Image (tube, rainbow, N blue to C red; front, top):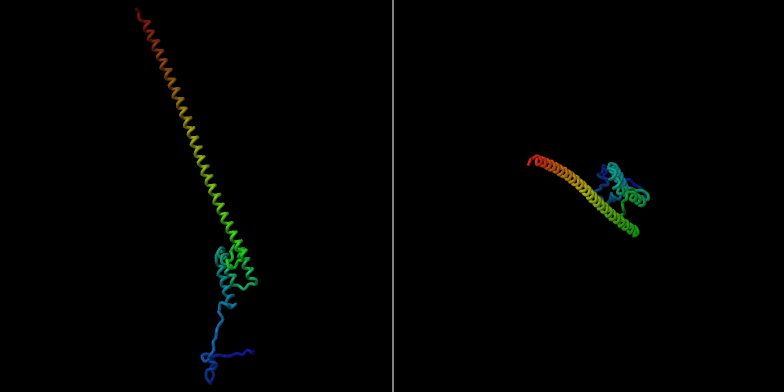
Length: 188
């Protein structure tokens, strides 16, 4: 097959040559999304757009951008990128062993969360009990101080009462002595 250049809708002195409207044929274009040039342009634009995103967003969408590229060993490359980023495969793309491993990992994560919650609950309960014990110690110490104060005040009152009794006894002795002297002084 030899290549031949055909000019369409060419004006000639005899009229229009190769008029496309007179052609009785069906012309179909390949889907643009399937063309490698379109894919590479789209990948280029996605890379540019992704590079302007914050780092945490870049890591979330990098696997989607790489899907558009024509990289040799793309499946293995994508698997490694997903593994490094911690992005799991779709369930449809996993083997039976991978699905079981993911289920086991999910169960282990759930068990770890449950154990962490139990430990946190026990620590909170321990702190609550320690706070109650501390409160009881403070109340006991306070009561001890109140009792000591009451004993000191009682001792002071008893000392004052004893001193008052001694003063009354001295006055009584003095009055009796004075009364005896006055009785002795009376002549009969």
